[in-house]
Image (cartoon, rainbow, N blue to C red; front, top):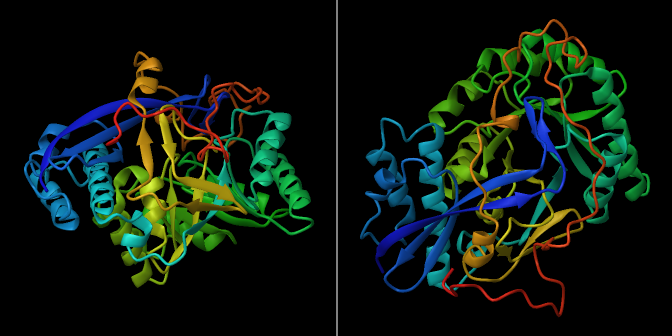
Length: 418
């Protein structure tokens, strides 16, 4: 089997409401999802998710190679891009190709990736994550009620701009999940998305901890600030989680050496091989690993095979437009299916119908000018960004579940190989 080429597509995750974090909000809730499809001479196509940056240079390491040599090809891609490939968007391009190669390898073996990687249990524990800073209280309650109906009993809220607003929202979600769990106490996490300075982080979290039990606080300061993360980690009761925006393993080492993190995170766009290696590095430090992402299918499969996986982020309950995924959400967990490979099917005609013109960078991907140096970490001090607040609208008519309901027939794909 040989790799013959690749194609790119960009679909969209339609949230139907504002989504974002302390850095900004995407008001219409339409989030681009870039795809990379890798073709072979035996008609098997693999699907990866990640940036479309530097793809031609990365693909030079793969062209004509046997896609089943995944880990060797991963290092070959890094060698071909060694001056840019260990960080940033190019590392994401490597991750997209890597995930597609694992998809091909498992399809060729006739097995779901979780089984090929040595997983024994197809269930992956999940926590709810609504990217919810733009919601008012009623909208927030409605969103987490939906998560609760799928058995979720842990939630991560976006916050960091106003301590009393964070407290109220965390208490509200705690009440929703407690009722659904018949009195069982839920796990609560707060994600600040690097919006604080060190002392701001300590003051904010310690104030919340007067009345709340936080399981973890995520990215309280800049992701690379090993000393700052260690300062926060030692000053608060909550665990400190970080790593989703770190790429090469060299970026993790200073944090682990400083004892700065309690939960090691990796993002779906960095690929399966990176997750496996980051998980092994965390395991060597007796730390758990947790994965982050809206469509983290490859990493969910990989999570079944590592001994230190803790819990995985569940954002949207439906897949991006034009995709179906062979997994379900039940009893607070992802449940992976038996389709060979990742279990992703791509409907290119549906994606083409939703093609959108690219706009300027906005929302949570642009760091505000005063982030980390506000006098108060509060939305009314005149320096914090303003967010639209919305109630949750009705579920759109084109909503597609992760797995079609029993007896339902999804539209036929444009190309059965994808």
